Each structure stands twice: as structure tokens, then as C-alpha cells.
Length: 385
Image (cartoon, rainbow, N blue to C red):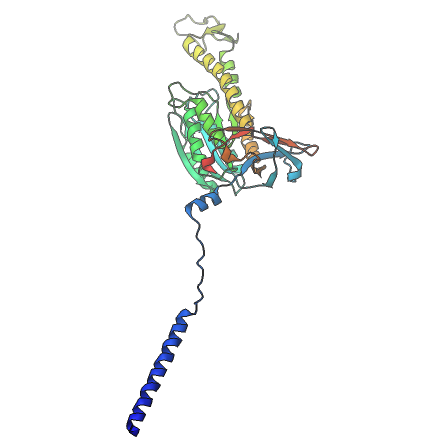
């Protein structure tokens, strides 16, 4: 074999060996596993829903000391909470900003006591005494329900709405007002909901909403309801008007029979005989009967309003003068600012209850000298949890 052939053969073998080594190296690289970064797991819609759902009840509570004033030192160990008779484990106790809906009755106005001007003044007292962190909305009801001011912490804006938008109507639709208030409160967090109603509770017939159903909705909203009632003030004014029956006794004062001086129709030196007002007869018997019926209606409405305030842990205030009504506006504001919110997880899970089930709640003080006020129960609404 010539030297040239030998050299060519060696070159071919070298090239073949080089190609084989390269292929093996590449094959080895493919066989070596490459580290992979695991993606962060994303929750499914079902998991997210489970995460959001909480088994928690928020219970607003007002605490008073021995002197009837607000107790600022309330602690979890001071309280015993029973749900349907079963003691509950309190998770937290705190104070949170309130959302206060003013629900103002401007219908069925009788000038003897109830008036838009007085209702406006009471509402302004409430707003002026609330803390700056509290939010306020304003509704009025007469023939219809109207939102005058949406939720705001701007006190000047609320005052402007009260001064310029409040007006009187011929009829009062309390049930419609209560139902609309319950719907409006759903825009606010549970535990922070308050309604201040200024009314005498008497509403005109023919409304589209049944009072008992409207109250159920308001109770289900878990709001605290405070009521400043016209009922006693109205009855006092009606009793005063109708006092003495149809015959009104005169004052018995002698009046000059010729008050303007000499009567030109009489001879000189002569005057007419003096007169005495013995009394007068009220010929408007229909109006008297209307007032009497209205007075009786306030007694029935008062019972309903007392029950509503008591069920929700609020106050039913029955002032007997205009000055007292104005003062009660400030009292309500102080009560709202003095409220705690207690949270607990019910030992019987909420998810086990059908929507609409009522659970009775009792709260007792474990500390001497402590007085507590809270709502009497709540309606389970799993869809809202």
C-alpha cells in the first residue's frame, strides 16, 4: 500500500472517531435532566370561595358602668355570650366606625306637634354629635321613600341635604321606608350598621309593603335601630286640643260693649251693655274624631317601635317636649359612639343552618357593676357570609 493511501485511511478513521465522540456527548447531554421551576399553584374558584366564607358572628354591644356612663375598659373576660343557650368562645372585641342611616318621617304632619322643622333639627343634632369617623346617609319617607344623601363622612354635605331637601307630605309610608333602609344597609359592613328613625310610627293605609315583612328584613340586616318617637308629644298636643269636649268654656272677662268710644247710633252719653264670653261650641266634630283616632294609633305604633328597638339592641326614646326631643338626638349619637363589636364563631356552624333561620343570643356581664345591651338574636344568611 502506498504511503498516500495509508495517510488517507488514517484521516478517515480520525474523522469517524471524532464524529462518534461528538454524537455520544450530545446524546449524554440530552440524557442529563434539566432542573425545572415549579409554578406557584393558583387557587381554583371553589378554593377561593371556601377561603372567603367565614364562620363568624359580629355582635354589637353597648357597655355601661355603675354610673350609667360608657365603660371604655370592656374585655373579653367580662362577657358571657350564649347562642340558643350554648356558651360561645369570643374571638375578639373591638370598636369600629359606624355607618348611620337617618330615616326621617315627613308624612302625616299635624301642626300640633310633629313637624318637618323639628325633625330636621333633631337630625342635625344627631349628625353634629357623631364622631368624625362615622359615615352618614339620609332618607325621608312620606308618600314615597327618597334618598337625600348617600354615605359620606362630610358633615357639611349632610347638613346641606337636611336643610334643602327635606319636605313634608300628606301620607306616611313607614313600612316602605323600613324595607328600603334594610336594602341600603347591605352596602356597609356587618357590625357597623345603625338606623336612627324619627317618627310617630303611624302610617297611612294602602301601602304596598306589609310592616311585619319590612321589620323582618331590617332585623335580618343585623342593624341596631334607634328610635326617637313623636308618640307622647303628639298625644299631649291632641289631649290639650280636645280638652273640655265640644263646648269650650269662656274666660269670663267683661268686655266693653262700645270699645271704639261713643256709638253714633245711640243718644249722647249712652253706651251698649258690656259682654261676657261664656264659651264656644266646636262644630268640627269630624276633625275631633280624626285627632282622637290618630291618638289611639300612636299607642299601637309605640308598642311596635318599642319591640323593634329592643330586638335590635337599640333605644326607644319617648320625649315629652320639643327640647327633650332635641336632646335625645345627641343621646343617640353618644350611644352609637359607645358601641363595641364582639366576634365569635358559633359552635353550631352557620353552614349547617338553612338561610333565614333565627338564632337567639343572650349576653351577660361577668364583672360587677357592668351593664350590657345587645340585640336578642340574628337571622342566618349564609349567602352574605
